[in-house]
Length: 302
Image 1 (cartoon, rainbow, N blue to C red):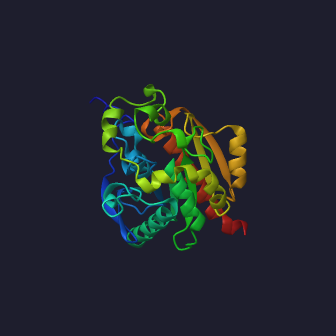
Image 2: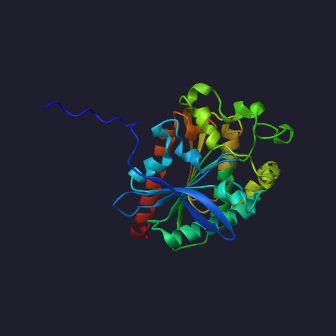
Image 3: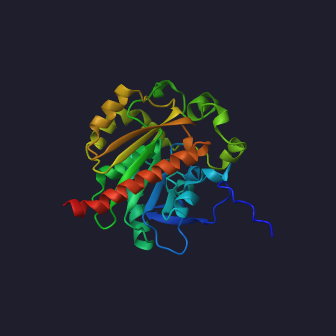
């Protein structure tokens, strides 16, 4: 009897990804959810997309290996990818979006709603890209909940200083910014740009208006972040400065108990849609494992 064919690591994982709606205060937020089968989650990964994208940024369809949702569920975590305020379902309630402070409040309320309705495991771990990283840091800066703790942040595509003059850019999306978002097109699987039409969205007005304020806002937010932080920079990151001097300044402003900086080769700004996505997602989940281990060992050290 011939042996069965070996299963490829790139075959679709048998974890369902479904759409849910969260109550973000007065603003309903659409989201994608993947949960481990036949077991409670060890923790919950909350994924926050960047400007001009949607939650499905973390569930790229161009290749099965790209999905953070199916990968995380396979490893025993729930993964919740949220459409930030002004995107998806909430675009009807807040057609102009929300500024950073309001987004942090809405997302925090949505996570409270999720935690009241679903098992979260040990706590929440935020994986965020670009503008989503700003929201994640803002959520962490205001987080005081102890019943569902915030375990850590894993951020990509963000620093505290832009590499370009955003005031002279003339809009953040269009052919003139393609090189900033993507880098070399060979970094992405075939059909990426055809399928990307489903997950690309217009950046809301209030969000776009505040983009240039981030360098000044970061310092006040960073001093109130009290959880571990990991920062990843793609080889072809072109939106943000990420030289050693910039990152020394940035990490020095963070009050986090632990800050790690990683670099991802063969990746552009939209790294979760490229061939390097699986490597990045595995590294992010490995950092979550470290945060869980630190939390478990803290009472023993005490």
